[in-house]
Picture 1 (tube, rainbow, N blue to C red):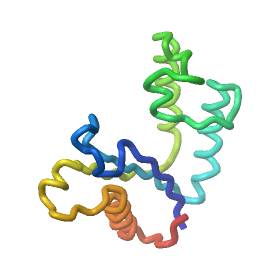
Picture 2 (picture 1 turned 120 degrees about the vertical axis):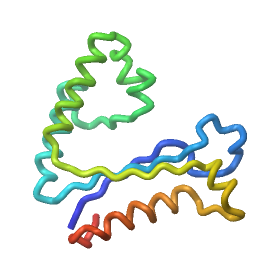
Picture 3 (picture 1 turned 120 degrees about the horizontal axis):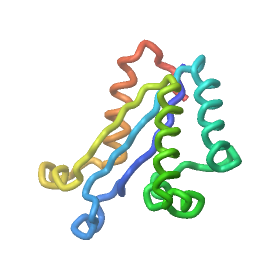
Amino acid sequence: MLYIFTDEYGSPTYKNLHKDPNKAFFLSAIVIEPKEYPEVDREIKAFKFRWFNTEKVFLRFRLISNRESICSFLSDKALEKRFHDDLYETLKRCKFRTLGVYISKEKMQQQYSYPVHPYLSSIQLICERLIWNDEKDFR
Protein backbone atom coordinates (compact mmCIF):
# COMPACT_ATOMS: atom_id res chain seq x y z
CA MET A 1 0.00 0.00 0.00
CA LEU A 2 1.12 3.57 -0.69
CA TYR A 3 -0.29 6.83 0.62
CA ILE A 4 -0.88 9.44 -2.06
CA PHE A 5 -1.65 13.11 -1.41
CA THR A 6 -2.50 15.41 -4.30
CA ASP A 7 -2.87 19.13 -4.80
CA GLU A 8 -3.66 21.23 -7.81
CA TYR A 9 -2.65 24.60 -9.15
CA GLY A 10 -4.74 26.50 -11.64
CA SER A 11 -8.30 26.04 -12.75
CA PRO A 12 -9.12 22.57 -14.11
CA THR A 13 -11.63 23.90 -16.63
CA TYR A 14 -11.60 25.25 -20.17
CA LYS A 15 -14.44 27.63 -19.39
CA ASN A 16 -13.52 31.29 -20.06
CA LEU A 17 -9.96 30.27 -20.93
CA HIS A 18 -9.50 33.49 -22.92
CA LYS A 19 -9.98 35.45 -19.64
CA ASP A 20 -7.89 33.10 -17.49
CA PRO A 21 -4.45 34.64 -16.78
CA ASN A 22 -3.12 31.16 -15.94
CA LYS A 23 -3.79 28.96 -18.94
CA ALA A 24 -2.23 25.92 -17.30
CA PHE A 25 -3.28 23.26 -14.85
CA PHE A 26 -0.84 21.39 -12.64
CA LEU A 27 -1.54 18.38 -10.45
CA SER A 28 1.12 17.18 -8.05
CA ALA A 29 1.21 14.02 -5.97
CA ILE A 30 3.27 13.08 -2.95
CA VAL A 31 3.75 9.33 -2.58
CA ILE A 32 4.66 7.98 0.85
CA GLU A 33 5.31 4.42 1.90
CA PRO A 34 3.41 3.42 5.06
CA LYS A 35 6.59 2.74 7.04
CA GLU A 36 7.76 6.32 6.28
CA TYR A 37 4.42 8.00 6.95
CA PRO A 38 4.74 8.37 10.77
CA GLU A 39 8.09 10.19 10.45
CA VAL A 40 6.82 12.45 7.63
CA ASP A 41 3.75 13.23 9.72
CA ARG A 42 5.90 14.06 12.78
CA GLU A 43 8.21 16.32 10.74
CA ILE A 44 5.37 18.28 9.14
CA LYS A 45 3.50 18.67 12.42
CA ALA A 46 6.68 19.85 14.16
CA PHE A 47 7.28 22.42 11.40
CA LYS A 48 3.71 23.71 11.72
CA PHE A 49 4.03 23.95 15.49
CA ARG A 50 7.34 25.84 15.24
CA TRP A 51 5.82 28.46 12.96
CA PHE A 52 2.12 28.57 13.91
CA ASN A 53 2.04 27.19 17.48
CA THR A 54 -0.40 24.54 16.29
CA GLU A 55 -0.24 21.56 14.00
CA LYS A 56 -3.86 22.08 12.93
CA VAL A 57 -3.19 24.48 10.08
CA PHE A 58 -3.22 23.96 6.33
CA LEU A 59 -0.16 25.24 4.49
CA ARG A 60 -1.64 26.79 1.38
CA PHE A 61 0.51 28.09 -1.48
CA ARG A 62 -1.70 31.14 -1.93
CA LEU A 63 -1.47 32.11 1.74
CA ILE A 64 2.30 31.66 1.80
CA SER A 65 3.08 33.36 -1.51
CA ASN A 66 0.67 36.26 -0.92
CA ARG A 67 1.60 36.50 2.78
CA GLU A 68 -2.07 36.36 3.73
CA SER A 69 -3.86 35.52 6.96
CA ILE A 70 -1.70 33.30 9.17
CA CYS A 71 1.27 33.87 6.84
CA SER A 72 1.25 37.67 7.07
CA PHE A 73 4.43 37.47 9.19
CA LEU A 74 6.27 36.47 5.98
CA SER A 75 6.22 40.13 4.93
CA ASP A 76 9.30 40.39 7.14
CA LYS A 77 12.10 39.33 4.73
CA ALA A 78 14.26 37.82 7.48
CA LEU A 79 11.36 35.72 8.79
CA GLU A 80 10.43 34.72 5.26
CA LYS A 81 13.94 33.43 4.62
CA ARG A 82 14.02 31.51 7.92
CA PHE A 83 10.57 30.03 7.19
CA HIS A 84 11.54 28.83 3.70
CA ASP A 85 14.91 27.52 4.88
CA ASP A 86 13.21 25.61 7.69
CA LEU A 87 10.58 24.24 5.30
CA TYR A 88 13.30 23.13 2.90
CA GLU A 89 15.26 21.39 5.67
CA THR A 90 12.09 19.76 6.99
CA LEU A 91 11.19 18.37 3.57
CA LYS A 92 14.75 17.14 3.04
CA ARG A 93 14.36 14.94 6.14
CA CYS A 94 11.10 13.43 4.83
CA LYS A 95 11.13 10.34 2.65
CA PHE A 96 8.59 10.64 -0.15
CA ARG A 97 8.41 10.73 -3.93
CA THR A 98 6.73 13.35 -6.05
CA LEU A 99 4.88 13.15 -9.33
CA GLY A 100 3.53 16.06 -11.29
CA VAL A 101 1.53 16.69 -14.42
CA TYR A 102 1.46 20.01 -16.26
CA ILE A 103 -1.37 20.59 -18.73
CA SER A 104 -1.37 23.52 -21.14
CA LYS A 105 -5.09 24.12 -21.55
CA GLU A 106 -4.49 26.30 -24.62
CA LYS A 107 -2.53 23.57 -26.40
CA MET A 108 -5.14 20.96 -25.47
CA GLN A 109 -7.88 23.08 -27.02
CA GLN A 110 -5.79 23.76 -30.13
CA GLN A 111 -4.80 20.13 -30.63
CA TYR A 112 -8.08 18.32 -29.91
CA SER A 113 -11.65 18.94 -30.98
CA TYR A 114 -12.88 17.47 -27.69
CA PRO A 115 -10.01 17.80 -25.21
CA VAL A 116 -10.06 15.65 -22.11
CA HIS A 117 -10.84 17.53 -18.92
CA PRO A 118 -7.48 18.70 -17.44
CA TYR A 119 -8.18 17.16 -14.04
CA LEU A 120 -9.12 13.79 -15.53
CA SER A 121 -6.11 13.68 -17.84
CA SER A 122 -3.81 14.65 -14.94
CA ILE A 123 -5.20 11.90 -12.71
CA GLN A 124 -4.81 9.39 -15.55
CA LEU A 125 -1.17 10.34 -16.11
CA ILE A 126 -0.31 10.16 -12.42
CA CYS A 127 -2.04 6.78 -12.10
CA GLU A 128 -0.13 5.54 -15.13
CA ARG A 129 3.13 6.33 -13.34
CA LEU A 130 1.93 4.73 -10.12
CA ILE A 131 1.09 1.38 -11.70
CA TRP A 132 4.75 1.00 -12.66
CA ASN A 133 5.40 0.69 -8.94
CA ASP A 134 5.48 -2.83 -7.45
CA GLU A 135 2.96 -1.70 -4.86
CA LYS A 136 -0.53 -1.64 -6.37
CA ASP A 137 -2.64 -0.75 -3.33
CA PHE A 138 -3.11 3.01 -2.97
CA ARG A 139 -4.85 5.13 -0.38
